[in-house]
Amino acid sequence: MSRVALVTGASRGLGSVLASFLAADGYDLVLTARDPDPLNVVATSLADLDVDVTPLPGDVVDADHRRSLREAAEDLGGLSLLVNNASALGPSPLPPLAELSTAEFERVLSVNTVAPLALIRETLPLLRESGGLVVNVSSDAAVGGYPRWGGYGASKAALDLLTKTLAAEEPDVGFVSVDPGDMRTAMHRRAFPDEDISDRPLPEVTLPFWAWLFGRDPQSVSGRRFEAQSELWESA
Amino acid sequence: MKLSEFRFERPEVLQAAEPPEERGLDRDDVRLLVSRRGAHRHTRFSNLAEYLDPGDVLVVNQSATLPASLPATWTDGEFLLNCCTEYGDGVWLVEPRWGPGDPGPLPLSTGDEFVAGGETGHVIGEFPGIDRLLFVRFEGDAGVAMARAGEPIRYGYLEGEYPLSAYQTTFATTPGSAEMPSAARPFTERVVEMLRRRGVGIATLTLHTGVSSLEVECDQLECGCRDVWNPLYPEPFVVPAATARAVTAARERGSRVVAVGTTVVRALETAWDGTRVAPTEGFTRTFVTPERGVATVDALLTGLHDPETTHLAMLYAVAGRERVLDAYESAVDERYLWHEFGDSHLLFAE
Image 1 (cartoon, each protein chain N blue to C red):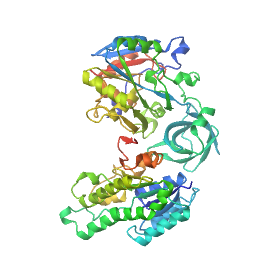
Image 2: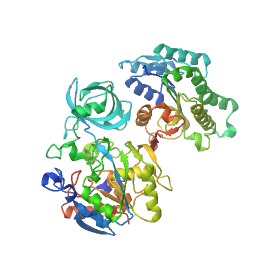
Image 3: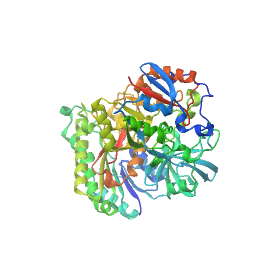
Image 4: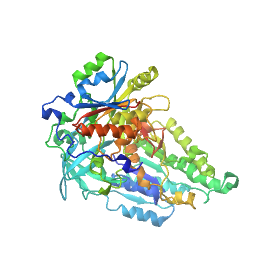
């Protein structure tokens, strides 16, 4: 059976690391991100690997773009893995909730919560057919209550609950949320504009976790929330 | 922790270069160092039961050793592919080596195809921070390749090539370890029977070990292995419900829990939920250090560990650095033998 993965936010950081790992493992890929140039750089870097890669720049909050992502997956033969990785942090530096504008909060929720659900809905027939896996990328902010992380954290907490609910409602598809842990990424730099974050590991540090997760039967992990850098990855 | 805290003098010659059977001994004839209440006693492993009390529970690892070393070829030549950890769905973490005493690195990179034990595979990516460990996907069945052509993983300090049976413990039932969980190697039916008669319980768990060669070869700070201190190397394990119950019950009645091997400590510590050992299954990255502490075991029965290796941090966590180094001084004085075919050490926490 064909293995096709759709990764959002694939132009940088964790998304691009995942795209490279999946391509090397033989997945055909649909990749998306808002900015076309770095997305094309990622796609081009995978040219030597013997897989089909379709880069489609666009915004996941746009319904037309989501439809074209689904069509691109269909062109590759279906969909067995959806990684909702694209995320909006909100303003940088992060403001306390009392200063977070409604418009900014709505944008965070649109990208981090509403769009992933809409993309799942768009691709669900393909995922049901393959018995596939949906990975929603979460954050420790979803459970933390950290000052200034309220808007972003709330969007990820809601995403975690959507994940759990979908797992209960859709027995043929696996749904997990994954907190990748602190990593040295552009988003992390925006979250801590005044700090040196060079002590944080690169997103590659999570690769053993992904290798483990993708080796499990999607139904055996469905409904779980994982921390990629934790001491224990529990499968049962 | 500083690397200097893990240094001690151990003459190079004090390494077991062959199994005790090759020296005309039974497995349980190896020496046993018992470190308890600040004193060190020297005995034979066959006397183990004398140092345990009725009600104590030994926890053993029932993982069996795989013939995990495969002859392999790729476009640039021949090599050994040491299979380290199965991740599922055909994906393995492996260490390619030129030979038992010649680790490489080999110039294999992502996308490269190889044939190992007659099965084709290709490189998916590098393990983060440890360049010599690669993720690969076998197109066929790695188990078939091992059955066909695999040998136990061997290292350069051994004198001969010993069969897979030399790398199995008497508790081995579940194949999956790249290297023998060697702490249980000296157990024989005779020793198990003596323990039973004494009223010592034996509980089992499974933890499949990966390759420890990184530590063996990188025990010099100068070796340039930038990840010698990266201990967060995931290993699959299962703590069954019966074992979780046996450990919790022993603790509640005041009996001792004795881990047979560092793998057992790692598994039990991972399964500890703060109040009890819970049935747990998955991959563990737990690194047991003095800072983290040990909640689940009262003693550790293990081999002797090399200077500058991460397992020492666990020993320090169980008994304290001073006591461990004091014990090792005694072991060196008495000419104990290190490594998987060597002598044994029962280290009590109190």
